[in-house]
Length: 251
Ligand SMILES: [Zn+2]
Image 1 (cartoon, rainbow, N blue to C red):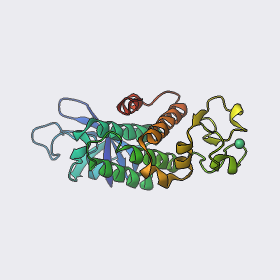
Image 2: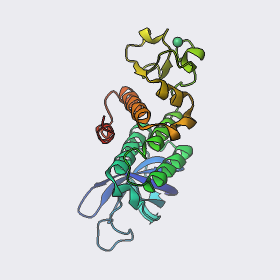
Image 3: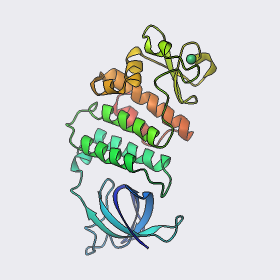
Image 4: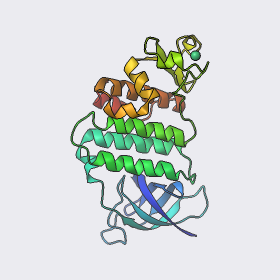
């Protein structure tokens, strides 16, 4: 059966001299893996090998959910050339592709997440060369990913006792626990050994996400570190790209 979709390539690897195995994130289909025969041939209906973050209209033949589909057409949009122009941007894009790969299932559609992923890639594609510039976008994308896959962290009250005041009032210490999946107040923190303490600036941003766009570098770095710690907790090990992100932010 031939299927059409609008999709972004999130993983590309060589399969043979002439073919590739590609993972696409499709707006209607969700994540799908397919074999693209002949993409590496000089003359093929594809315009050469498909690269990660190439996106456009795909046509693929599926033969069952557990098998590789066959890519038959790929009409690419203008490449996001800015992604590879600076290493930090590229690392951020690759990190989000890895998270999408790990946290979504094959053929499980997330059209909203698709839209925010494409928007994220297009936004960071236009950024000037500044290692902190992608951070607010990266943080917001990671939070929307968690929301879309149904594990949105609790950020508006203590996840344990539900208090709002002790989270909102900057005079109290606030923590984040990956195990509890959210913010934990000073009265409850002892019950969550995995918790990390947050600065007042980070708490403000996490309880009011619109502040993230204007947050200072130190706060953004701290929030990103907390998110990586959270993804590490969820996966049981650090994401492969986590080290690059932490390194580019100077740890
Ligand atoms: Zn509490």
